[in-house]
Image (tube, rainbow, N blue to C red; front, side):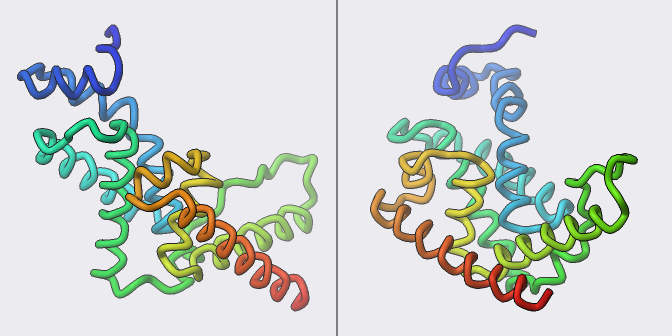
Length: 188
């Protein structure tokens, strides 16, 4: 299947009744939206649900897309709002939300000793706990910048914040993460 053009053109086509257009938009952005949701929520099942809710909300509000920002920023803003809503409904999950997930980021090939793999998993779990313990407004900026690799401008557009606020929040978040991770290291 050929692509339907830029994201903005796809939105225009979807608005004129092109049945495949919105599906193309979902195919283009579902992985990135899922990664954002997973980074904010910490659980695969919750991230899948938030991703689905994001695209449902986008479809329902397609006529409300004014083109003031890029489609990607619009989708990211919807996703962030979906994640915040989920966390509020769940009374913000505790650290156990991240601990429940099995970490698959470390290879278990023969070149790694079991002790090395276990140490790596502990470090990853500590980083995840530290990120999850941040206030939501700091966590979302860290996830979008460090995991989604969005620019400061894209984050500012997605969150509808001034650029200086995004930079300030990221700086504050990184300082807090550094302190939390130093506490982890001093315990080991």
